Amino acid sequence: MNEDAYKKTGRRIVLWRHGQTSWNLERRFQGTTDIALTETGVAQARRAARLLASLKPDAIIASDLKRASATAEELAGLTGLPVQYDQALRETYAGVWQGLSHQEIIKRYGDEYSAWKRGEPVRRGGGELESEVADRAAPVVLRHAEKLPEDGTLVVASHGGTIRTTIGRLLGLESQHWESLGGLSNCCWSVLGEGARGWRLLEHNAGTLPEPVLGDDD
Image 1 (cartoon, rainbow, N blue to C red):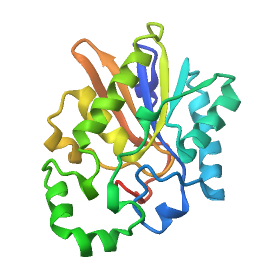
Image 2: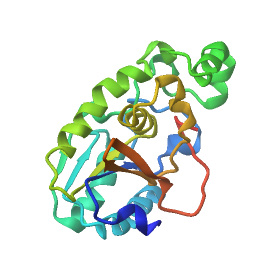
Image 3: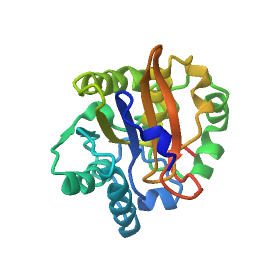
């Protein structure tokens, strides 16, 4: 970890992606489908929780989907902090894409997929726009961050797509540029720090040696 990113010089938001699931390994789009962690995913969450506990977080919030809630519970067990769950932190709803493999999506919905990758506003599978995900998730994160002490740390256990859109919104980036924020590997995190001109990205996809990004956000 980059220790400078974690010095107590203001409020911090740690956006933490859930551990591995079987659908991640199969490259199936999960979206709001409630898939549990694999044994490897649980081990990833336990390892990451030990690192994050050393930051002495002040609060933990999480998506209520199994893969995120189980990840958050590992940190709660080490810190004694309660986890506050919120449906607004769930992954992007992607309609008919959910449950399909990466190759199936490209084969059946190639034009839609390409438009999304170009940064165009697309309702993948007839689901949510990325801006709508940010509309529901970012205010929840900000509301909890505002409750922190001056040098406090909030940990948010959520999902790759939701985390990316939330970071984009909090940094003030236009939505067509959110794709420039690379995906998170399972159980890795990004750190936002509060500066004089708002939130800024201090670290991205931290927590392990480089690993492939598997899942909805690859």
